[in-house]
Structures are given as structure tokens and as C-alpha cells.
Image (cartoon, rainbow, N blue to C red):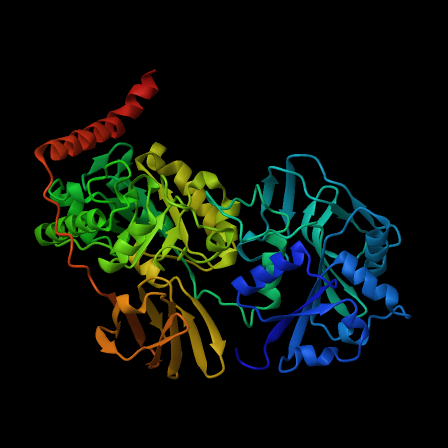
Length: 580
């Protein structure tokens, strides 16, 4: 961390509370430097030492702790150290006299009130006048599944509501004694160490999550890792490369892509490699990146990548790779080196197998391992650009459009890519529902860049200026850094790799380069000339066991029956339903 950057000052009681611990976990996740200050220490004269070496600091505190500090101050002005803060984030406003008195003091409204939980469900409105903080969530109205913890009812002409409800404010900004205060009505801060069995949903968990993320990403923007862009891709599972599959017509899809400027990657089942249409394949090759294919399992049998056996997984992956190579040889159509798990089912061992078989990432709707595997996925993993919990291999998450625009927007606020999941029925009505959603995405406050899936994954990483060097946090096994500036840029690429022995080497622009291994991270220094780029890839030692599978006739027959029945369902099932 370069000197002169921001630091968080956590004001707390003599013993850290649960909320204090939860705050520090979020600060650590975003790599924000912090130090703690107790209420008793705040009465001393040596507070400046805590922020030494940092140009500015911001304070995070509960309303109870802030109230204690201000009560001890003999004047209406803030204590000297607090007046020097760049901003103050206050949460935990209990509907009781001490917090009410504090709210009235710092807002200047003698009639300010803290009201109990509102009605369920509650609709919240995010302001569109503070895009620097709210980012892609700006201007959204979100119906929450549960009411807010408390609501701040404040009348102050200088107060800016950031997140409001009909009864008042859930998150607001105002000035007190020359300092910017941000009041969050949330009583608790979410514990990102909690295990997560499914995707994060802001409709179910808004309070204690969204306001603190908005604030930290804004207040510590000079130290938080940021994304160079929000890469986007529509991923449609299963279709063979035929002119039409179920409700999906590739001509219609291409016309829609030309009109709305988006990119689609087909999660292609390798078993189908012989079953392609020449004209459809030609349309993919000539689509200028609007259409591409990635790998969708091997045979697409139930839970084939939820298997725990490394040998079986290696055989499946080698078979899948052999088939995709045959597709390329027969059709001249290349494929994205990314896996989408069939039915979303995966095991921890599958992540490691993908790494040693040369895949650069997986993209998935499910966030936890299937079957009897231990689920170690946490909320922190879901708030990260990709899950790297399993074998330190990146699993990027994707969402269906019925997850709601608010969840895609929150992912964008976190720096995650925008990956949309779907099947052939996403193109019902020639894609009218999809088109409506894509227009909604385009209206958000972000830089959305549509790309083929592998290209999108390679550009999904975090960067931060660190003096004369740019720190690049690599997630996928391959990364593309582009220098659009007029001068040479030195980048320090760091990738978490707990198993150093598995790493064979690091390539930059297809040439092996020297790398270091420090504290569980692979580190590479690269100079990128003006207008140039660096294509960085980690190469892993491939296991000798496992060759392309030679399955029994009974197994092959069962796979074929499964595929034909699935196609019969997709191609004709919607017709039967429409006549019912």
C-alpha cells in the first residue's frame, strides 16, 4: 500500500462487538487499511499516531459509540480529531432516546425521529443524483422482501437521501460541523463469513449490506481494487449448432445482437461435436464476436462434474477437449476455454481438475458444491469478482434475468462481470423479454462492454495504483491488460496460488517469464509499452492419469437417449404446452 492513501478508523467500545468484527471482515475483503480506536482512547491526545502516513482517514462507528464521544465533548463542535475526518459513516440507530438525541444533534433537526421497522414488503428508492457512490444502482426502485431495520425521519434542506422509503431515509448524507456524515439506519452489518448455498439477493439482504458497500467503494476509492470495465456476456446453455433449437433461432438472435450490440456465448455440449449445420457454423465464424461457443460439460449427464474422483474428472475433461478440438478441425470454429457446468453441479475436485487440464475459468449459476461435498462458499466469495475457494480456480457467477436488475446492478457495484444465464426459451417471442432486459441493463450507470465469454473473463480483474506501479489482482488463469496511455506502464500481477508445485510457469505474450512466489501469491512484473498489451497466462502441470474416456456401449447408448430426449423436449415441449 502506497503511503498517503486513505485509512479507515473504526470507532468502537472497549471490546469489539459482532458488528465491529463484521465491519473489519468487509474492510479486509476490499483491502482497505484500518485501525481501531476505542471510545476511551478517543478522549486522549495521541489519535494522530493512528493515521500517521495517510493523507486522509474516514471514521466508521455505531450511533451508540459516536453518541458517547460527543457527550464527553464540552462544546457543540466536533472533537479536533473527528473534525479532521474526511467523512463519517454512522450505523445502528436504535429507536431509543440516546440515538434519537444523537440524530437530532448531528442533523440539526430538533424533531428528527427513528421509526421502527416498516411494512413488508418495502420499496426503496436509490437516488440518481449521487452516481459516484451509487454507481449502477443509481435511480433504481427495489422491492425488498422484508422491511427496513429502522427508518430515519429527518427534515433538513441540506440532507441528501441516498436510499429512501416512503417513511424517511435508510441511508442519507448531511454536513455537521463541516464534516460529511453518512447515516445508515441498518442495525446490523452483514457477516460475510456466513456460508452461502445460493446466490446473493439484495431483495432479501439489503440493510447492513448495500449502504456499507456503497460507502466503502466511494470513500476508499483510492485504495479499493477497481475494475477497468464491466465485461458482459449472454450465455445460452445446450443448443447444438443448428439454425433453430427450441425457441432459439440463430438468425433472430444475430439480428437482435446487431440491434442491441450484445455478445452471446453458447455453452456447447461436446457430445454434439459431429452434429452441426454448416451454415450455422459459418454464421458463428463471421459474427465478429457476437456469437461464440464455450465448453458445457462433456456428455451432459446428471452431475458429471459433481464427481469426486480426480481420475474420472480428468478423463471427462480430456474427452471434452478432444471433442472440441475435433469440432475445430472439422469446422474451423474455435471455442472459448471456459467451462459451464451442466445443471450447475460441481465438486471441489472439479475445480482443481479444470486447472490442471488447461481451462482458464468456470462460469456457473450454482455457488456451492453439489451432493455430499462440504460447502465452504461464503458471502465474501459471492462479493468477490470470482469464487476462488476451491483449488484457487476461478468460478465466475452468472444470473438469470428473473434475479432482477437490482442484483445485476449490485454485482456491478462490487466489480463483478455481468454474465446472463439462459436456455433456448429466453428467446421466446423472438427475444422480446430479453430485449427489454438488455435495454434496462444499458440504462444503468456503468461502462458495460459486451464480449465473448473468454475475452470477458480475461478482462475481469482488479487494479489499483501503487505509486509508479499498477497492482493487478489476477483471477482467471489468463489475463489481458491493455495500455491505452501514451507512456509505458509497469504492472505487478499477483495471483493467489496455494499450491506452488502445481504451477509450471507463467507466460506473457506466449513467452515464459520469471515469476516469484511470495506469501501464497504468484507475482510477475511486466512493462507494457504505450498502445501495447500483455496477455498473461498461468500454465499448470498436467496429470498423467486420465485419457479420453472409452465408455461402455451401454453408457454411450444411455447418453445418446438422454440427449435425444432433451432435444425432443426443447424442440417440441413448448408446442405441447401452448396447446394444453
